[in-house]
Length: 330
Image (tube, rainbow, N blue to C red):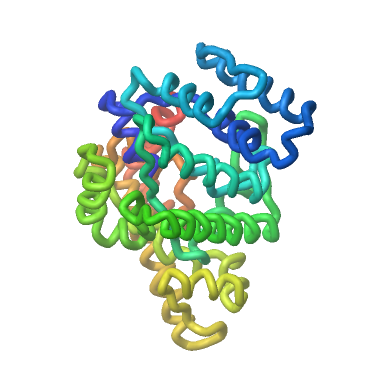
């Protein structure tokens, strides 16, 4: 998804703008409960005015209405062909916001969607993945994940909470959209759906957003059924919450300790190694376009056989390093 929207931005069809603070604080203000709490009102309006000032927009009055907030949103995007990314705003309680805050943001967005003078249309891509794959991926990334603030490390319990929370928040968003008869505003899709029928997925995206998406993007199934290679994910195979998430997505797992699990694990590990090598070769052959983040996520973790291949073909390693360096620079 990130690669697709990076492609739009590179084509001049997307303008990135700062919007999260305005929507979050606006939702807290409109649905603040006790309107007689003048201190809270003053604080929230001050926060919104600070965000508006950074955007070069006019300040709000002391007691702005919903129309006032919506008009500022209109002013923010009036001169741009914009795609606003709400994924972290709606699916994670990071950045000092709670699940209650996210419910308010959904309410605020739906109020704006019903506003007669709006010029921005919301579209939602409810993308999920196999919960065990999700757990394995986060565990792999966030044990050594470098950010501007340093190294971010999450415990296993934190990672499990993140996955459970994200799944629950997406279900809540879907329920809100369905309740308001807005089924045409979203598509439900899993990572497996995207990988197994990428052109079909792009057809759905074209229809949903009325924007032509690039169809030649490099797609790899390396992140599908990756969980057998993660001891952390395998330990959660019998977890009832994980199995409930999988059931919601129509996914069935082998039983813990079964022979079918052993066969599935061997097949998945061999399959992943094959695609690890293939990405290196395809990178060397310049088949991976610059807007594709597949090689920027983390270095390929190769087996001894893979490292021998790289010794035999040093140009593979050279091209791989060059690709990482360019991605980091960009």
